[in-house]
Amino acid sequence: MLEISGLHTGYGEKRVLHGVDLTVGEGEVVTLLGRNGAGKTTTLKAVMSLLPAMEGEIRFDGRPLKKVKTYDLSALGLSFVPENRGIFPSLSVRENLELTRSTRREVADGWTMERVFEFFPRLRERLDNGGSQLSGGEQQMLAIARGLLLNPKLLILDEPTEGLAPIVVKQIHERLMELKKAGLSILLVEQNFGFATTLADRAFVLGRGEIQWSGPSGDLRGESEIQHRWLGV
Image: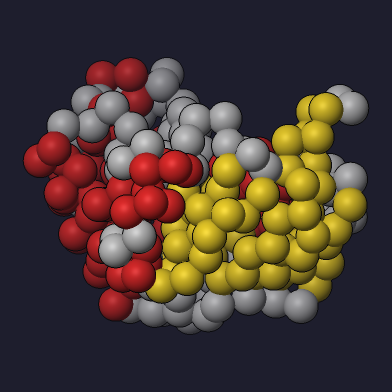
């Protein structure tokens, strides 16, 4: 599904990634882990065509993404929930959700507003509230809901638990586990080691702009040296 091969990218002339290889298969959840500044968000920006690949290639469903514009990616089946959540604070929950209609990928049995409200009941209760009136957890639910309404083949999440209370983190984990069981592919960047490795099938550890370790998430939980050196766990 998603194939990143020999990716070099960065900002201006400064390279942040040095030959990153990463794959996400159909129906698979993959997590990309690393310390702050390791290049995790940079990797996601490259996938979403927000940064150009200086070297290497990114392919989705066999198609090179080099010349695909960011706003065209949703039609291919890519949905990105950024670290800052990307909601519109001055718009209501309803309006935030309705904005996805113009770019959504139409599929049979896709995500609808009603299905989103069944998945995140709290959003129904807050339907007419502005984005700025929501708690951090509610904002994250709204951000994920917006991503799901695009009917993605691959949902990309950047730090979905950042700044959230433990009870909300648990709720988000449960919802993402439901998506996993339903067969949705997910690429997750996350600082919460336990959250990420109990959700993901496979893990990639990024350090100094290179993949330092990759394998089943369960194996990573037993790699104390890797955890300490590259993740600070």
